Each structure stands twice: as C-alpha cells, then as structure tokens.
Amino acid sequence: MKLLEIVSFLNDRECQYLAERDATRKKLEGVGLKYNELKAAFDDYKNKYALQVDLVKTLEE
Image (spheres, rainbow, N blue to C red):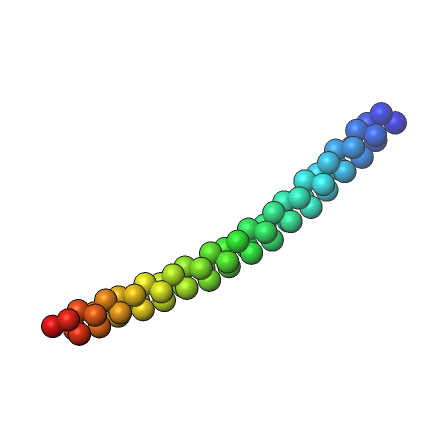
C-alpha cells in the first residue's frame, strides 16, 4: 500500500510540473511575439528617423 501512495504522490507532482511547464511555455510564446512586434516597431522608427535626418541634411544644403 505504501508503494501505491508513493506512486500517486509522484504522479501528482509530475502532473503539477507538466502543467506549470506548459503555462510557462505559453507565456514565453507571448513574450516572443511581443518582442518581435517591438523589434519591428523599433526598426520602423529607426528607418523613419534615418529618412528625417537625410531630409534635414538635404534641406540644409
């Protein structure tokens, strides 16, 4: 009977671990998507800023 209790306890712990792992993976995917969105927005901002700098240089000449 003791062995069955130990197996049940360990199985429950494993299920909790797997649930936490899956939840963490979902959060990580969300963070990855957010990072890609922010990186794209920053690249867009950087390109617009470079165009503005070129325009200012052109107008100053």
